[in-house]
Image 1: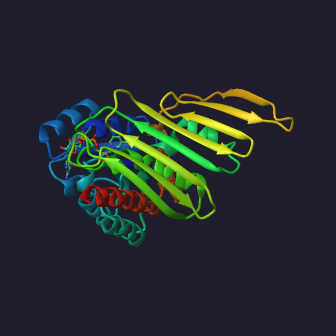
Image 2 (image 1 turned 60 degrees about the vertical axis):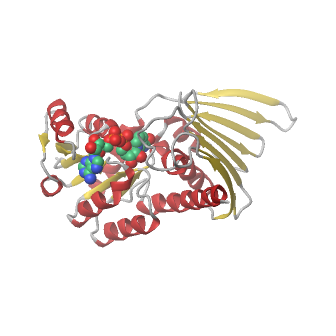
Image 3 (image 1 turned 120 degrees about the horizontal axis):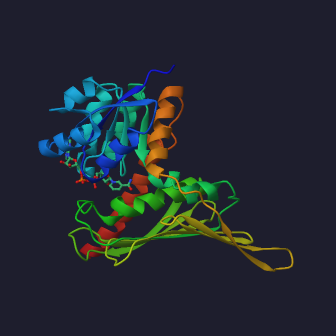
Length: 310
Ligand code: NAD
């Protein structure tokens, strides 16, 4: 019989509530309690999930083996650092931090304290992406569109750190090579930060990824198109679904729809994190991978900001 992992959620705003909800469904987890700087939100969530409402960060850390950090991005470093110093296993929502130096320190603290660190790049657990990865051969060109209506939540950072970082992580995972060149442009439309951005990443092996992210849209769209030799796959990460066009030796084109089982990606990613704690294995989205995605995101952001200032 495995002893359940004593788990806590720090930050129970919009997404933190979903963390608590999904953690309650994992049979190897005992959700001990929650902590939020907003004490009324903290008590409300504690009541809803029938767990303890901690009054301060030290109390939740002293009573847990692992925590989810679901506070706004600007506070990830401070909260994650306290958790890692308490030798808790830490799941941090994306982006792992808003500065590279902070993300580097988070990675080194996790290594030093020998605890698990996973970053919430949830699209890795998207059923369409998982189904596609089973068939992937060799991408030649990738295109992504991630559009969303404006929401004040997340607008404390540029759209690159808020939305595009999901696709940066996916293309780094798909291509598994070094980015050697970046072209980017974007604009601030609603917030004082960049609200829409386009970036073209060129990898060492010649693969090109063209990424577009916008939070100034009237609709939601999360699409990833992957071109391989004799094959084109369009992944709708929102539905989720995959459409494929394949070409045979006679140059005949065949259309097909790959069935994707609907699954809760947040449940899968938290379950995967818990499993890596139990089995003492590498997390599926490691701190190093979160850091690599952040490095590219910040390069894109700097290119766009430089153009804005000219
Ligand atoms: P939110 O504003 O709804 O919730 C954040 C909560 O954290 C608030 O209740 C706030 O009171 C609390 N808080 C702030 N500082 C704190 C601290 N130091 N200690 C404890 N509590 C603190 O925000 P949200 O939309 O839930 O986003 C939270 C994080 O999740 C962000 O980093 C965001 O980028 C990420 N996020 C990820 C996804 C995804 O697809 N993986 C989606 C949405 C949000």
